[in-house]
Image 1 (tube, rainbow over the protein chains, first blue to last red):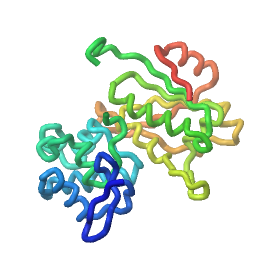
Image 2: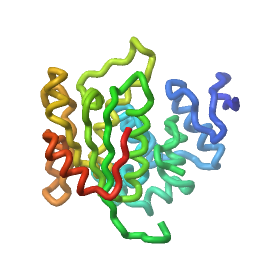
Image 3: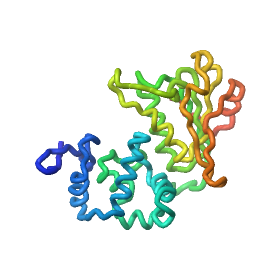
Image 4: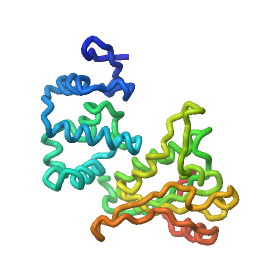
Length: 111
Length: 139
């Protein structure tokens, strides 16, 4: 099993780079995972990452991208709840990539 | 969906088993969520021990399984809001609608008003429901 080094602590990831154990997530882990994609996390990224963690906490699933887009729009406003904005932040796919940074499993229904 | 894109079929997922002890309930829920991406006309039915899947206050610590029941609350976000529960099955188990999770959906056309997703049905209504479907998947 692969792993990443978070401040000297070994954190397991699966073959696609998703955290194996959700509880091992820290903000530093998110920074390391995003650095793998050569992405620097801004406040706008954190907004989405934190939203995903809250969604998972409540529903125990990572939302599909359509659901994420709609929910972000409702919570943070229509200028953020659209694919263009979210893809600019997360070029590899807002659900897929942001979920990885948030330490969640790959979204159900994401192929 | 290159071919036949835009064709909407009526899908009914029939759930008859208790939530834990077998993988059927969780698998059904995952198929429903995955299938939701295809924007079909989806209904869910809960019959026999399947009604326990929607029971409030599930606690799985003792059996070491993940409690996936909170996920049913996300169905509304996935535009799945036709959830039919067999009234007889509930009664036979000493349950009422109040023992089930309060599943809701938001009606975008009515300023996101929250509406209940669960309807209780009798066996004739269930039969009629099945009759209307293009696809019935049983779990």
